[in-house]
Image 1 (cartoon, rainbow, N blue to C red):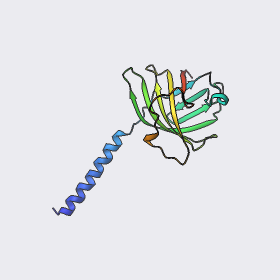
Image 2: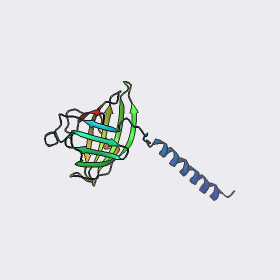
Image 3: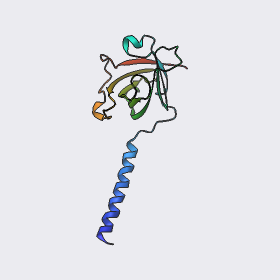
Image 4: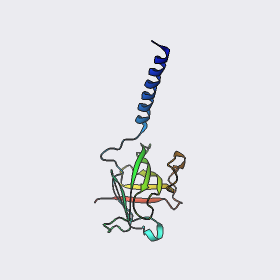
Length: 160
């Protein structure tokens, strides 16, 4: 066979194999991710802490509600799970890219580091806030759950 054809075929095969390896690294969400559900914290008052009392997370995105009793969101968004893992204590961790699609922060982005308790009933999170012009970047991931920053929040699963 002609060396040029061998090189071309080899290059194409290498490219296809590389795509397969990259695709395997992308997290594919389950139908029943532990992340999905209604998460609340009665102590939050959006005007004081910049935190909504209620957040609903589904496979389609998230919605924030000022008060637990509200039935209309003040912000909605979409997200992509970048990665998920379980630590030695059984807590479930997520790294998530988010983009607000409605509300005052429309088009703004965030990179969330979320820790769910082993029982998946407590949500603790810190995120990095990004303007619309900034692209998602692994360098922006929070390195830990930092309770001393404004973006930290804790929520509790609610049966709803």
